[in-house]
Length: 357
Image 1 (cartoon, rainbow, N blue to C red):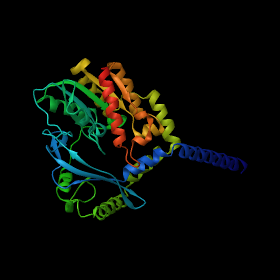
Image 2 (tube, rainbow, N blue to C red; image 1 turned 90 degrees about the horizontal axis):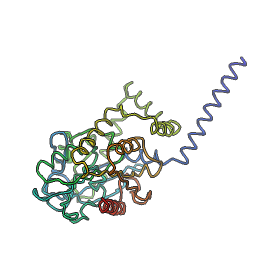
Image 3 (cartoon, rainbow, N blue to C red; image 1 turned 90 degrees about the vertical axis):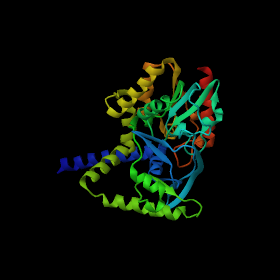
Image 4 (tube, one colour; image 1 turned 180 degrees about the vertical axis):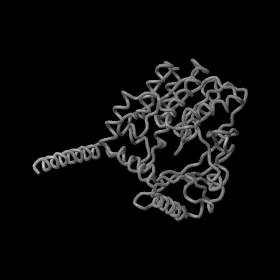
């Protein structure tokens, strides 16, 4: 009886200690959970019509378009508009105002949404279509990683004269495979009445001021679909995600991975291989720029960033960093992307690096 009591006391002490450690991490590193929660409650609206275009295993925008887009976040059951701006595309369906010409020597910028300029300015436009004697080309597309950067480079270099490459990356990119838009997304983008709620990107005919009514419908579907998923497999996955997301698990795991992580992960290996292929093709005419994310400013580099940086330094000396001065004011309140101040910083940082290169 005494042994049982001592065992229960020990067990209680362990749980109590873990509870206080979790509280400690939550107080001092609470932004991790907040930013992840916000991301799950994001709604991307695009002006109804033709927005994206699949090109085999990847996608780009339709050419010569001016598309209004807005991002909303569901906060305390209210849909708050985070940003609103126009995406302007050129003759090749890339996010920049100047059309590009085939024979002119060019510098190609490859990257994800940070390179595209999602959330505000297409900052590459500030080059005025030219850097020194090179035509600038913005090959940045949101949600993509190095595998897709490589596909984009192949797609563009078939038609245009690429002399230099700038690859801008964040750690999350190395978790991404190449992808394109599913057919249901095109249906939703072309006709808002056809949107169900699971498309991720939604078409909307702006001007009626009823965006929030539409978003309530989408939110209702999302919540309903979450409640309907009661299978054991779903329960098991959610339980595992809950455990892995606990601060007492997340932070030690993330720290250990930085030092003991290997490149056995298939997705990360494919992405590093893609960068290696680009590096071999362009040799001294390619540079890599690591970008800090909002999350990394708040609670440190991810192990994906740590691994990517370590890998790139083994294959090139042309590796640089733009850390946004570790200033959280360069980012939106809810969204993970830079605001216009952040994109101004990014332009200046990249320009300074190019001037040294």
